Structure formats: C-alpha cells, structure tokens
Amino acid sequence: MLASFLRTNRQAAKLSKPTLENLTPVVLRPEIRKPEVLRPETPRPVD
Image (cartoon, rainbow, N blue to C red; front, top):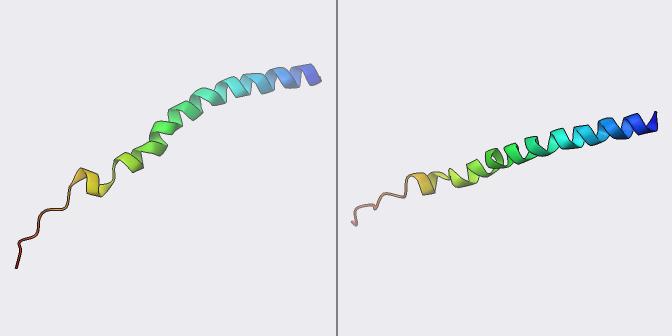
C-alpha cells in the first residue's frame, strides 16, 4: 500500500512540475506588463 502511495505521489510530482513551469510566465507577466513600461510617461509641457 505504501509503495503504491509513493508511486502515485511520484506521478503527481511529475505532473505538477510542468504546471509549475507553465505558471511561472503567468506570474512574471504582470511584472513585465508594468503600465510605466508599456506607455512611458508623456513629457508634460513646461509651464
């Protein structure tokens, strides 16, 4: 029973690894999509 549990656990670990790798770009995206980076501050006319 323990062996089968370890086997399924190992399979779950194999399955969860790619999903974690697939999630990292999603986590990093908000940092890349900073509004300041997308649309830089427009130079305001000097008074």
